[in-house]
Image 1: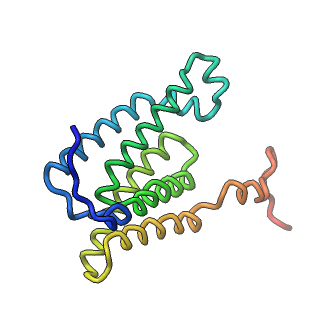
Image 2 (image 1 turned 30 degrees about the vertical axis):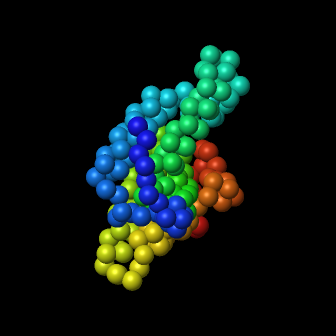
Image 3 (image 1 turned 180 degrees about the vertical axis):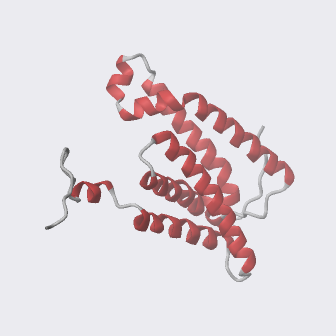
Length: 179
């Protein structure tokens, strides 16, 4: 089902968060549920193919099909979300929460869930901030929130390269107090 959407040129870039009618909202929710369901179905083989494509292909995982399927899911998500959040905000909501999540955990599925949770939390925080400060546009408030959360991850957890550079305690030795 294709819905005719009236869209100004600026709406494609910045979106219209509060401008969706009930039928557009219903379509967006149904598409989001379908994308989440398909992503949950292909999550394990997709992760396997992402980590080691050659081994996954050797084990019978349809690597090319998974790649094209994932590309289609991201395209459907971007196409549907652009009407509400715009292309600039969409890029920020795809990249910043994922970047923050990957800095906070080394576990892929935990990072996926954390990224989704951060994106929702940052969206609502930005909308509430925009409601409290009427002169602040919602898209700016949301991007400011996502940027602040991503920047905070640099204070919380050092990068892997910085952790490798720290001196590691030797195995089998216990620290002794100076006499």
